[in-house]
Structures are given as C-alpha cells and as structure tokens.
Length: 363
Ligand SMILES: C[S@@+](CC[C@H](N)C(=O)[O-])C[C@H]1O[C@@H](n2cnc3c(N)ncnc32)[C@H](O)[C@@H]1O
Image (cartoon, rainbow, N blue to C red; front, side):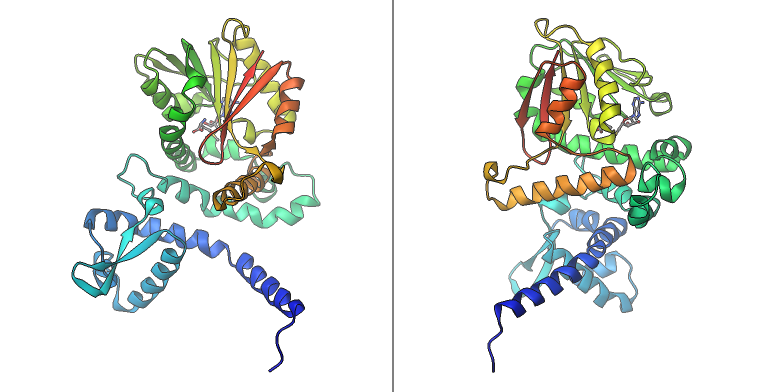
C-alpha cells in the first residue's frame, strides 16, 4: 500500500478541523443539557461513583433514553466535565464522578457557574450570532441589534426574566473569580477607605471585596432598575445612576467586566467620569479595572496548555463582545491608548489566575 503523503495528511487534518468547528455548538448544547437535567447536582448528592443505570433512574428517563445518556456522558467525560471511577471492590463496574469543572456546575454550591451556562446559551442570545456575516455588510451597531432591532441593554431592562438570568450569571462569575483573585491581588485594595463599584450589578463583587477588607466602605453604582429592590449592608450601599453621567466620589473606582462592554469612544467617556470621582494619585486615587488583557506577543507567553486555553477564551469573548454589545477585549497597547485619551498618566497590570487581570490606572 502506498504511504500517505504529507499533503494528504494535512488535507485530512484540515477536513477534521472543519468538521470539529462546524459542530462546536454541540459542545455548548451538551453542556446546557447536563446543567438543565441537573446531572452535576445528582452526582453531587449521590456522593459516590454513580452507574449509568442509577443515573438514568435518578433522572426518571424512559428506557429508550439510557443509551443516549451513555453517549452524552461519554462525550462529557472526554471533554473533562465528568470522570469515571470503578465502584468499590467491583473493578469491572464504572461509575461517573464530578471533576473540578462539574463541581462548578452544582447549583447548591456557593461557587457555581450554572447560571453562566444557562444565560450564555439562551436561544435569544445565540440566535443573534446567525446574523454575523450580514452585520459585517450592514450598518447596525451589533449582530444582536441586527437580529432583534434593539440593544442588549434595552432587553435587559424591559424583559425582567432575561435580566434576572443575566445578573445571576454575572453574580456566579464574580463569586468564583473573586474567591481566587482577591487573595492574589490583595495589594490592589490595601490603603483604600472607600470604593465605588461601577456597574456592580447585584453586588456580589462588592460583598467579596468588603468580606476581604472589612474596613472598606463600598458603593455599588448600577442602573436604577437593577438596584431598585436591593438591600445594602453596613458597608455596601446601592446607588441607582448612569456611569456616563456621574460617578459618586470615592478613593477608588472599581470596574469589573465593564469596559469590555463598550467601544473605545464610550470607554473614554466612562473613564473621564471615573477621573472626576477620585482624588489625586498622591492621595491614593486610582481606577481598578478587572478585565482581560490579550497577550499578542507569543514570545512573552509560556508554551503551557493553560495559556492557549486562556488566549482562546479571551478571543472568544472578543467575538461575543462584538456580537452582543459593541465592546471588545483589548491588548495592553489598546488599554494604554484609552488611559492616555482619558487623561490618566500611568497604569500597572497585575496578571492573576484565569483570563482576566487587575489594571490599576492612576490620575
Ligand atoms: C457585564 S455586567 C458586569 C457586572 C459586574 N461588574 C460583574 O462583573 O459581575 C455590566 C453591568 O453594567 C451595568 N450598566 C450598564 N450600563 C450602565 C450605566 N450606564 N451606568 C451604570 N451601570 C451600567 C449593567 O446593568 C451591568 O450590571
């Protein structure tokens, strides 16, 4: 038999690559399916390896769905969401167990990403991605606006169910992220007495920060409809307002996952409001941004597998920000230009675990 040429190997690799990407949405939908069925919750409460038939019983599945469940779980095990382990002394029989990833999908855990999955694969949101190519040739601000004739922010305000899903997802993200990066970025909050979390949503980030720095007084500024029914605590106060109009005065402004939602022009407007709200650098004034910094210089990057997942996640986020909100993920150069254009003099980036960094910006 003739040996396969290099050209043929490359051709078949490219062919497989295309199949994988054309089907990639099945990964998202399988993830959505296991969260909706509550499989991580069932494995969590079972507390030991769970066989296929016990899992099917717990899900009350008809017998015809046991083999499809087996195939769904095989894919999710392959993708690292679950693992298998032999059942006690019976080495032959395998049961499913949680992994670090699916432990983050258990809804009763305080650290959970279940709402993130359910919001990001919401059909209303996903459907706007089908207009990506027509949007490129049109004049709408975003593919979301091209598909639905309005901006995401309007839908979040007008559709309380969609709004709740979004704010639950943001709260999930903040809870998990802050539990890790606050420790790494301790120095960022040292010496501050007051902080305003701009676009702070339902306050999860603010509560995490004051939990770690109890001497700190924190205001959470968000749109009036978002904070209307929220109860503050002794050192977390909710304020309804518009960050484009004015920001309450504090030693520092915190913005987590905010500037990546907006165009450069809008970011400069927001950053100018931030600058008005804080004292001079000598008096401790600064803006603290938690967002991605895209690492373009491959030489600076470690060749670790982790690093490619981080970059891919950042680049996917960038497409999502383009599709939904006219925002973008930025390189260090792009961040620097924003800071100069809005009148700041200096900045410092602290890279922490995950795909986002702390950026301290000084007047
Ligand atoms: C992507 S979410 C981030 C929420 C939160 N910082 C977090 O990371 O969990 C963006 C937030 O900005 C808020 N927002 C949008 N426009 C705003 C405005 N003009 N003034 C104040 N907040 C605004 C939204 O209501 C939402 O809570």
